[in-house]
Amino acid sequence: MDENNDIIQKIIYNEPMKKHTSFKIGGNADFFVSVKTIEELKQALFYAKQKQISRTIIGNGTNILVSDSGIRGIVIKIDIQKFDLKEENDYIEISVGSGNKMMALATQLKKQEISGFEQLSGIPGTIGGAIYMNAGAYGKEMKDIVISTRCMNMKGEIFELSNEEQKFEYRSSVFNTKEYIILEAKLKLKKGKKEDIELQMNEYLNQRKEKQP
Ligand SMILES: Cc1cc2nc3c(=O)[nH]c(=O)nc-3n(C[C@H](O)[C@H](O)[C@H](O)COP(=O)(O)OP(=O)(O)OC[C@H]3O[C@@H](n4cnc5c(N)ncnc54)[C@H](O)[C@@H]3O)c2cc1C
Image (cartoon, rainbow, N blue to C red):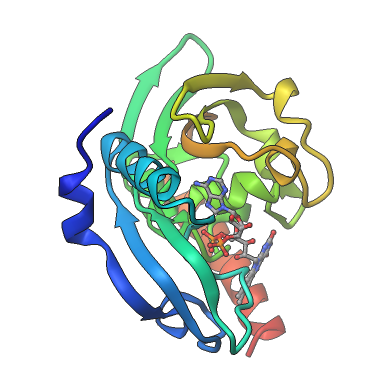
């Protein structure tokens, strides 16, 4: 790839990271860019390589603490959105972008009467962030529903990892040790009834509210 002019227009200099983290603290990132497509992500990685600066990947910033001194190099926020569903014989396969928010996905699944995501519905952040740390709640973790994940390495090469290859453990995965960027994931869910899904989601959200006032 020779051109990265498009991404240069989107790059912000000295961006306060408190604008991009739940804790609302922390200094500035030297460079910051939000990418919505795989092409933009490739361009951002190319930009970092050309400038010889470090890259920090973030999702929705709900599990990131930034110090007052900020972040050197470029922060790349992954905002790649997708939602497709495919009915298989005994399950429903959902293809979802790594930038889709967990809570928004839960609402979308409820509308389409797809069950199996209720326990995870109140976890803040993106699908990418949730897969990265194998997020979980109320007895369910991402590892229980991820079929496979499409990723990119720092050279811009794209590949797919099976559930097993993602080495999910309690709040960790292969992504903690390898510099892979999560692009999208296939999830295994099932048909449900809107009323039941809504009831369960409300139950878990109420439990959450009691614990996190
Ligand atoms: C109020 C509150 C409640 C929470 N409840 C729960 C809970 O019940 N269960 C739970 O497990 N967690 C919980 N969390 C933690 C947090 O919501 C999860 O860790 C969430 O999955 C993080 O997603 P994010 O998009 O915000 O990731 P970020 O905070 O932006 O990033 C977290 C890590 O993931 C990496 N990452 C993000 N996106 C990608 C990507 N596309 N490719 C590669 N790496 C990526 C980042 O590099 C970083 O290391 C809670 C947090 C808060 C603030």
